[in-house]
Image 1: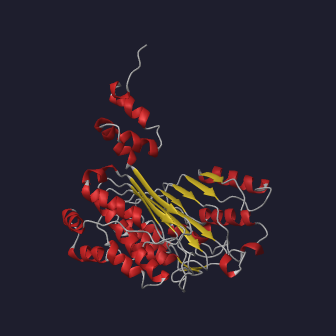
Image 2 (image 1 turned 120 degrees about the vertical axis):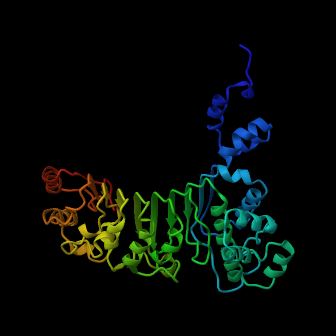
Image 3 (image 1 turned 180 degrees about the vertical axis):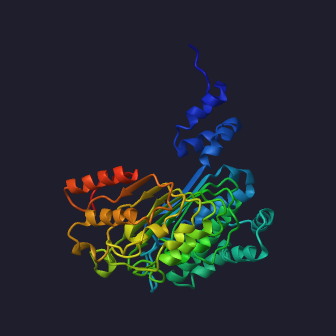
Length: 412
């Protein structure tokens, strides 16, 4: 049987083959011919990720290179469906580094500012936002940058990089008409402006505290799914990261998308301040309730730590759960989370949670949540898992209230 070239195959067969290739092979394939480039480019640009751990500099160069490419070849922006710009912070110092201590400063590529301004006008960016963005690119000329970096200390240079990062991602978000999913981290500041990304339906936020949520969420006019990864570690982000969980501020931020959001996941984590010699997770303390969540009129699925929803400790006051649940909620999930200081004082932590929820059901506190179908409780903190008494209580509640009740497997 004679061999058949890839280009001789039907287009659906070609797509089926190239979808199996890794990104590096797709790039090589796109250089083989114009026809193959047309097939490969939508896959190459569909998902763009910058993910880093503790480094001296954010990936400014890569983000600016992508921005320059999209300004020069605008149609490529239509292919981008997912953009991840997430890191684990940067090394910061209050003194000048010793020779050889830090890697060489990255060389920023030149950016066509005239094309940038033209693109901003085309997508309807206000003059105020245009001025803000362009002011955050003051050192794009390599010669100016070389002069600048020879006179400033490292931590000042890092702040400049943060401005570049924010501005670059803000522009990227705004000029990507097909963007559906965006993941951003703590580098994003409230000073950055971007216009309404109407195509964005899924947003994931890392390490950003509740006081900075609203400016990000408020511009997403068509958001369907939000995953918020809440983190408290005392030696990270000290300007905003505190032991107090401002639940009222958090719920106010979520209300910015009450008219569109259908799925909300809040995943919480506390970590010890390793750099300060701590080895135990810190205590956290709630401030204000989450009752404003009841205004999320489109919400169907809610995943949130038990302690966040109750606004207190593991054994909440009566009526602490029901008032915070929206009428249309169908699925309620309590994820794994290390509870704070009262945890060790309770003899049966599993039973305490289920008993509190049972009390809410019996008192009619959840009677307005007529669409509720299932509730999933957190995994047991005990090595042997939940007790038989716990399982029997769940079965009894299933029969009495017609809910699908379960608990997650796993250990703390």
